[in-house]
Amino acid sequence: MATVSNVLSKKVYVLPETVEKVERAVRELKYVPNFTARSLSLGHAYQIGIAVSECTNPYHMEVFEAISDYSLKRGFMVTLFSMNSRFNNAMNFLTERQFDAFINFSNQEFAEDVVELLIRKKTILVNFPQTGLSFSFDYYDAMQEVMEKVCELGHAKVGYVSTMDSLRFAVDRRGMAFYDHRARLGFGENDDYIVFNDDYSSPSEAVGYRKTKELFARKNDITAIFVTNDLAAIGAIRALKDMGLRVPEDVSVIGCDGLSLGEYCDPRLTTLWFDKTEHGKIIASHVIDKILSGSTEYDPPLMVKGKVLYRNSLAARTKKS
Image 1 (tube, rainbow, N blue to C red):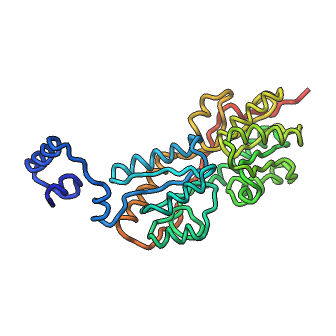
Image 2: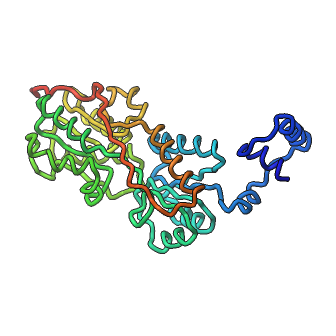
Image 3: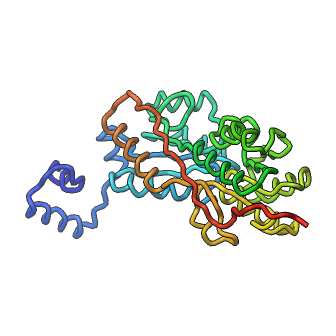
């Protein structure tokens, strides 16, 4: 039994002729390993959960795919939770089952009793304010850079379409940069140039479309807008076109996430980005190492710096007739 286990797990060297015998027997018997039994014997569930706000956003899927691909190579299964419309069902599933780690990419707040239950189950928590590992991205410097570029291109009436509420926006690194530098760059400090979103059940593109129309109904002198993510930015571009405005001739648009989709929309979207595939691999590697080592010590937060990807949705301000 030990020899068969060593061959199947590939963690211990076994003579090639023995490996061949075992693999032949596996084929002939159509043997499938019992994942549950393996988990019980080794003391790990070999399960990682990931919570996202919207499964339709390619940003989340790019990171999820990278985590899943790496995890599978190391024998871990990954379960994705959509936390918006099915929040209660997802919570029931999460609390009833055993996960070695749970990674939070969502905007939802988890109840204290749920977090406490996960801690009692010795689940490694990632991106929870209460405890655990932290993997995030920092767009502050990139946001400052592109704001300075917007100023250099002659824009002074600059708006922000946020897919977040005002409290989350204020602690988000993009929001912080916007607040910190808008006056210095001549954008003013009038909060009427910012629209917030409290409806987390709507997809980002719908929020971007609706909130852009709301913003321009309030302030129609805007010549450049920042948008929280690329899907919302694509929705914003559609809203501007429906209002008879051209992008970037009348209004420049800057998104965030670096989705490949932004390369193919019209115009091509200027955006903030980082390597999401590499980021996902790093997260998975750290989490799985922590699971297998049994360590209760947590590393310092890992922050990935964002960059600016300039495309032609950002251009110099033109005089309106």
